[in-house]
Amino acid sequence: VFHTPESTPTKMVADCAIAVDVLRATSTIATALGSGAEAVQAFSDLDKLLAVSETWAPEKRIRAGERGGSQVEGFDFGNSPLDCTPERVGGRRLFISTTNGTRALQCIEAAPTVLAAALINRRAVVQHLIQHQPETVWIVGSGWEGSFSLEDTVCAGAIVDGLQIELGCSLDDLAGNDETIAAVSLYRQWQDDLLGLFHHASHGKRLLRLNIIEDLKYCSQQDVLDVLPIQRELGVLVKA
Ligand code: MLT
Image 1 (spheres, rainbow, N blue to C red):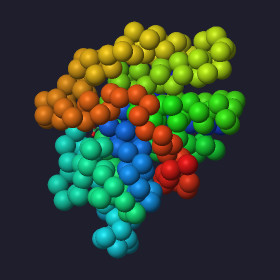
Image 2 (image 1 turned 45 degrees about the horizontal axis):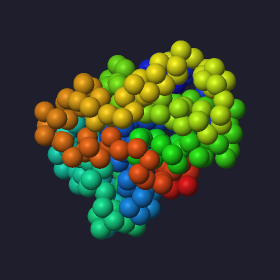
Image 3 (image 1 turned 90 degrees about the horizontal axis):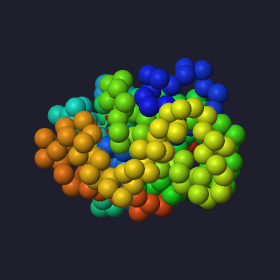
């Protein structure tokens, strides 16, 4: 487990790398694919997103831009998973750029397998790992501008906890670093009140100040979406 893109080694040695941005990019990506989006293409840079999406027919694309929790002016969506209904995203490509989540995806894009995880699709991620048994797995939290975030770390812990239960092994068999043990401990303490944890989290508080309460509730649910976002080509995620 790595808490932020900044603390993730630059040399990619993982067989499988998982980006986590519970609030809210990876929750939005999984929801969009679950609602029938053809693919999600992630960009760290807004101008690049605009340039690439410009080559797509307007009825086949949705542009989602978020900075500081708010929608970027001129974009169709901000970063709310609740906007990603089948009516709005079905059959379209979601072009997305967010403050931290899309940077986390970019920092692991060289891995042979790249997944996007949130609490809502945690079980789908765990099932994939059990089926494919990659030897080295990195779980990378997006954090906030280089700092640790509670919600991403608790999700990393939820994934490792799920693996440990399914495999019936000890935590030491799975844990590659101390961050992993810390993430699992955090999850075990808060697993029955994840929404309560989000109210303590700095980004949770930021979203609450923006009155984004329903997203917090939605993103705090566990295992409600059987969708595994997987990278098909650089920066492009599809439903596995
Ligand atoms: C991010 O990328 O930092 C987040 O997804 C921000 C947000 O809640 O929109």
